[in-house]
Picture (cartoon, rainbow, N blue to C red):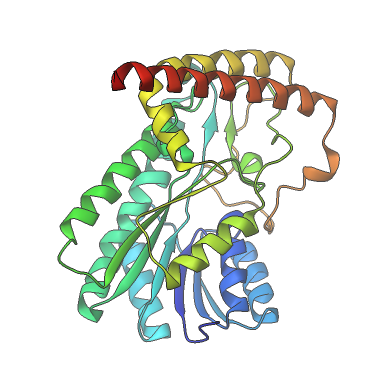
Length: 324
């Protein structure tokens, strides 16, 4: 059954998972306030939301600016009345060996993926406490469990975000109508790689079989009706625990995969992507790569699959040894 009166705020709403989730809520008849750095992307998604049957207001906001997020939250509440669900989906990445990536780019990833979510929480929790209810959905990714060589700052931000969310959940234990929901998808077919900084010399591409952003969006919409602390999409939840047990062995397996991939992939120049500025045009929901998958991608996928299988096997062995 649809809830047509949901009042939803989404940061990072101009593309990818945030955009897909905005459209999914709009199909439920929700009223939305969408925030991101890029006005063109926001306007594009807002138009799609209205066409889908929802109401959508847009506000340009840099989520790394705490004062700007505070103003955004107050304006969003004024627009909506109350806020039923806030989805923090701001995120960027930079790919490359740690010492070869400028430190300011690493810092930007931490600011965007971790500090911006803290800014969201700091602005919205007083609103939730005053209302006496609210759902915060926190986009993390399996990178919050699985170590990601060549993306050290990304790993630091996602592991940190998981710990931050767990700490807040404990603080709010006595507030049964306020829910903190973490979402952990595997690879998702979004413009994220196009927006990422890249210092590998290799062209970034998604393997076949990545999740559709709509699948993640549907899971977020479901949390509006049935909040839960942890939602894993694209892999069994227990696999994340096994990967955690197997660290650092799984990290070494992934590092070897990345070494091989970076040598075999198509070549490209270094780029900061959209770390510091929003994309010049609307990016949409999907990456656009699915229709152009080639044999090179299939080789990369086979390598990745091998690394994942090896990591899972190592995890099982470690778990068995510890359980004896």
